[in-house]
Length: 84
Image (cartoon, rainbow, N blue to C red):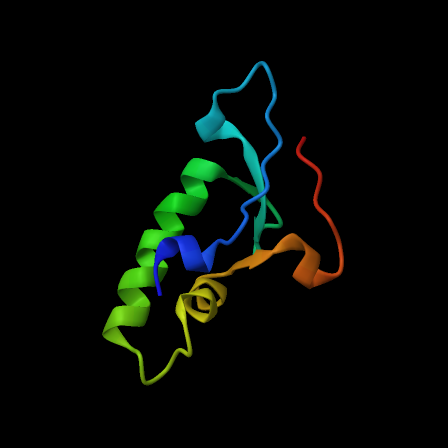
């Protein structure tokens, strides 16, 4: 499974004042409640990939490893976090 599989159809809100790397995604940090930018999501997805590769006996897939790192789709929490 690749990072593309982990974050299928990443939805972002483009704002004319922000660069695309600062666009907010539908993924949040479950601990802080902060909505992740596309760049933040790419960074943590790389970490999740390494975590999964090192521990395939623990995680079913990279998405599960993302959850272990505290990153989940906002919709999964039953709420949508709006960008500030």
